Length: 310
Image (cartoon, rainbow, N blue to C red):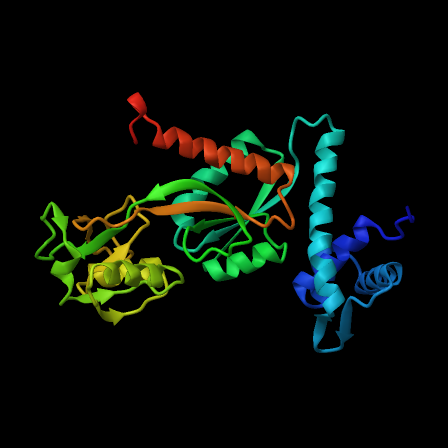
């Protein structure tokens, strides 16, 4: 086996440069000198026998095709190196960083409880998280930028591995003064002529429209907000109804308007929440622990007394 002529520190420097986009920003992030960082990149390129980045003044750093390929492998090696630290310490306490992505509308209700419980279980692990749309998060998973991502089971790339960690039922959100606010359930067909506020954050909009199409309904879309809270605020102000999945505990919008959640009369499918990861990078020990925690939580919620769903 040929001797390895580059260091983990050089890989750390390269990843920081790639993520920051400029040598100066990476140097500030790592708290090292810019000339030293530039020299580290040069030495890594020499050791690998390939140019990884094009450095241009006032234009930052652009990765070459080789650089983009090496970047994903470098991230994987660095995460595996963090595993070695905990193994060398006896293998009991996990340490290092875990990077988790979360679909933007899921994050407020899904992330806090998961982060709190994982922190209690593994205080030596620092969890970084990123919120974004599902297409962006999946791309970041496959690029090795994220260890895991919390997503809805909608338009998932087939090469990603996944596990169900929660099940949520779609509902209709109405302003408190709506004519159907006191009805036990609301039929989508009964809203067909009313204005709809469509949450336009992929894949939420596609899923909503697919539900209406299934029942032969063409909704009258009035607004297309891209944020969950603006959607709720528009509904609360009487601008229309919305079909949503996430269920905040608060029945007030940011501006104080009251909204009501109504179950759907038609037999709509539940939305499955997934934890996804790339098989190309695999699961490090921190990611395995997070996955185990999430699946255990889901099992405890779905199997209640006498085997009934909670």
